[in-house]
Length: 332
Image 1 (cartoon, rainbow, N blue to C red):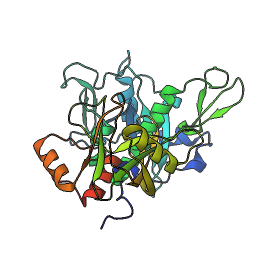
Image 2 (image 1 turned 135 degrees about the horizontal axis):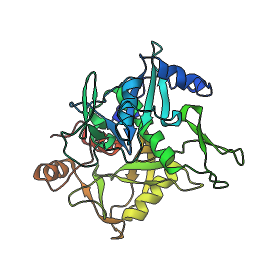
Image 3 (image 1 turned 60 degrees about the vertical axis):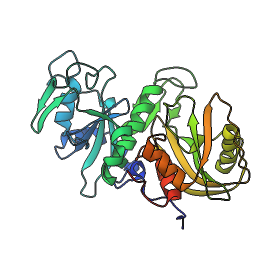
Image 4 (image 1 turned 90 degrees about the vertical axis):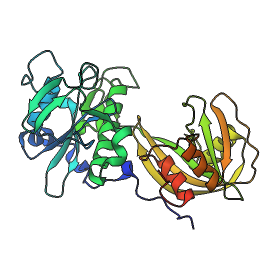
């Protein structure tokens, strides 16, 4: 029997108090930076500083500042990062503050050169150019604690990068609330990280076959569940029906919510559904969707085993939807 809800997803986990009540305190970041117990994630462009085991590399504030400085023109122990590069992610149960440090765009981590090139030596070991990894790549291997914090850090970093100016008047904005808002001093408006709702759905027919699509922009062999953004004035359920019909010509009626996952690439919240098809004829537009087809469990198992079908990554809600329908973790 197919479960009614999805299992806990890697990027959806959160086990730290997000400390919203502390964000307005002017001393919250200076106090955290002065405390050697504070732990810091280094983040840039969807990536994180990692250990050799593809786990998050936690830093002290002082060591994080040295990593930041290692990408600049001066020595690694030069001036500290600007205060607006630090983000308050939360507070542990024991009171330890958890921060992220946004490295600048031209920081040399993972931007070329020999992987063995050491940028800075820290007490717990050197930081090399290849000590960087995308959250897309390592998300499935992170534990609940690190996955939730890394997701927030990547999402906030992307928002700050893309919204340096006021959408009302165009003036530059300044960072406020320990990294959780931006303020325009010209017109006085406040701006907060946006989240774009998107639907993603496992569409099944009367014979319990699963509908998968191959987008035109994807590499050969990659197939996934259908998905799309919720439009203005539209409910999530309406978006499911519209997207399925637009992409494949298939009509669905029953739509059941089964779970969600923050997807910070750059700012989506994926709302997962199971939808029942009332038609099975497939018609793709050939522009956005190159192909779509129905799979039985045996057909999908054989296609994956032969390499004809590449399933979504293990950190994704798309993979969870496929495995929920399949009945468990997919072989291999």
